[in-house]
Image (cartoon, rainbow, N blue to C red; front, side, top):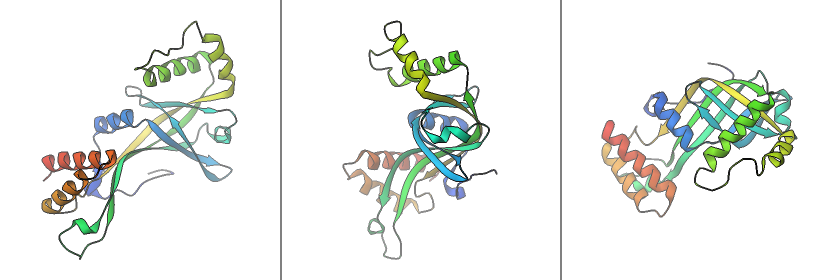
Amino acid sequence: KGAFSVYIPKFFEITDKEVIYDFIEHNSFGILVSIRNQRPFATHLPLILDREREILSGHLAIANEQSAELEGQEALVIFQGAHHYISSSWYETRQSVPTWNYVSVHVYGTVELIRDGNDLWQHLLAITEKYERDSTYRIDETNKDFVQSLMRGIVGFRLRMKRCEGKWKLSQNHSPERRERVIQQLESIPSEDARQIAELMRKEMEYSP
């Protein structure tokens, strides 16, 4: 498959590209993993998805060593969604073990650096528009010179997506009765992650009981 891969039992595999792209757009703070000096190197950063061109774009601080060997590499980006511990005490039998339910996406692709100043500027406009869409902040003539002065301190990049792997681990390998018990327990927990996992489990049961 390539330099990286993730273990996904068939129960949990998501292959629908639109589902995966929706997930990326709603969980767009990812982890970029590449090789630096023959060792894994990772950076947490916000990313922009271009669905039509199948490209992820982002930028690193120029002081971040990850950028030094990034161009041309096959890199991995990990997007993490909701997750929660599943206690075996929630099951109907002690012949069971605990687990962890979660949703995540791994994206693999080749990296190219953004060397053109105008392209980097357009990237900054796009990423600002995405994350400031509910605020009054914009990059415009009032702060253009300031932002351009800071551009010297960053390295932009694009990752051309070769493949995506979606993993929705939502107790699909258990009986409907047991899954319902887990959902009820999750719904009783005052946690946003617990609520989201319970909601995803219910939706999954509707389509594949």
